[in-house]
Length: 397
Image (cartoon, rainbow, N blue to C red; front, top):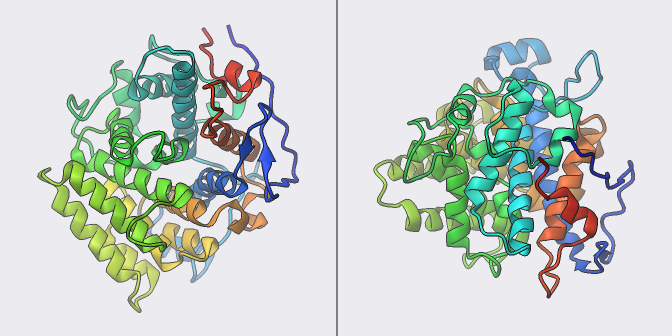
C-alpha cells in the first residue's frame, strides 16, 4: 500500500535567516545550522544539475557547445524547462531518508543499524529505477514523488550491488569497485549528527559503511568518510586546526588516517588530496588542474576535484561549482560533491537564486533538509520533532 504523507509547504519565499526558527514540536533550531544543512543538500543538487548535461562530454566538446568558458549556468531540459538532477541527487535523498528512518526507529527504542536502514532505502531507490525492490523495502516517503522514478543514467555498480540483495560492508565487500557512486551520496551522514550525539570517528566510519554498501574497494568508501567529516565540521564547527575550510579538509584527512591509515591504498588518496590542496593555490587554469587530478570517475578523484574547487573558491559558491563541472569526466558527481562542501560551508544564503529558480525537486530537497535539521535538534525527552515527522519516517509496507 502506498501512503501519501502530508507535505510541508515551503512555497517560493523562504524566510530562513531569522533570529531563530521553531519546529512544530516547539524546539528552537539554530538558523545558521538550518542554512548550512539546506545549503549542503541544495548545493549538491545545483552542482549535479550543472554537470549532468556534460557528464559524458570531453572538455573540448563542452567548449564547442557552451563557449570558451564552458557551461556556466544550468542548461534546462527542453521539455520541462527544469534543471534536471541525476542519480547522484536521487541517491543522496534516499540516503537521507534511510538515516532519518533509523533515527525515528531509535527514538522508538527499536534496534537496528544505519547501514541496514540506508540499504533498505536504497532498495526503494532501486524500485524507482527498475520496478524491482528487495525484501527490506518499503520505508521511503520519497516513493510518493513521481519525478524520482525518472532514470538519470544510474550507475551500473550501484544497480548490480543492490540487485545482490544484501548490503556490502567494509568487512564483507560486495565487489571491488572504487567508482564514485559511494562518495557522491554520502553527505547526509555528516548532517544528521552533531559530534556530541555521535563521535566523529564513529560518524566517519558510518559514512564509509554507507558507501561500502555498493562499493567494496577501500578507495570506493574511504573518500566518503572524508566527505562526511568535512561536511560535519562545516555545519557544526569544532575543528581543532582552525576555522578555515583548508583546516576542515586536513582535519578530515587526519581522522581518516586514524581509521584507514594502514590500508594498502591510503597513500594514493593522501597524495591526490595533497596535490589538490597545492593546486588550489597555484596560478594554473582550472581545467588544467582538474585534468591533472583525473576525470572523477573513481571516488578518490571525485573527492580530490571537489576539494580543489572548494578550496580555490571557498568564498564563492558559483565559481566553485562552475569550475567543478568543466572538465572531461564525471561532471555531475564532481559538481555534486563540490556543491555539498561549499553549500555546507557557505550556507544556502550564499547560493544565488539563479541556481535554484528552475532546479528540479527543489521543494523535496529542502523538505528533506528541514527534516534532517529538525531531527538533529535535541528535544530533551527523545521525542520526535512532530507527529508529521514521525509518521513520515515510519515503515510503510
